Length: 259
Ligand SMILES: [Zn+2]
Ligand SMILES: [Zn+2]
Image 1 (cartoon, helix red, strand yellow):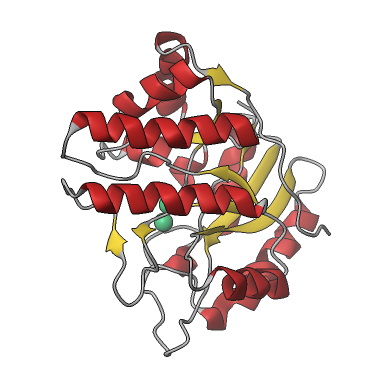
Image 2 (cartoon, rainbow, N blue to C red):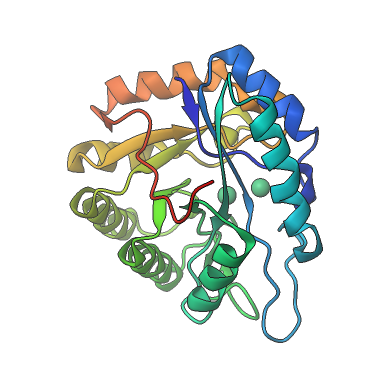
């Protein structure tokens, strides 16, 4: 694995280490193409600012710091600078416009909520048997795919569904089919693996294999050690075999603008 387009920075408030430590760790692991995709800074129209994003006040510093490092390590690694962003039906246009204005070069979809997040979205990592929330999540992800601006779907299996297995399969199969038809890769998320979270979920990747959706990997580093994670890589490679996944390797980024 010589690429990783899912990296965070300490600015989001739940990551640690310096950007340079991440980059050095990635180079040491053999990564030649790396993307930073911290949580998109955003203030909702009523003034609410999510606790888990890059604060808007630090957005400029995010790009300035990483641009300096991009130049410093240009000979060793190719860096691209983007965001992990959700698709919120009421706010997508505004969020996307702001992402571009910050200088965002690419986006990955990290759909953490069903609905609009604020004021009444449902955080999908919390277990629920509510089929309507699952359906809303899948509807949101499909709409995100249709925008054509997201390079891939990070942790598509973040939704922690405890309800009817037939409903899970029906909904997630829709997502997998759309990924294949629109040729948008689905990411096996290594943060979930190394942290022992409820995702990545094998029941999802079984469906992705059956549907031959394009599959890619992402370290989702929130610390320097996570910028290269060979243990999760091995496990993900095993799943590629086990579920006959259509592993595409390095995804083709949809570049929104480039430096
Ligand atoms: Zn995060
Ligand atoms: Zn995420």
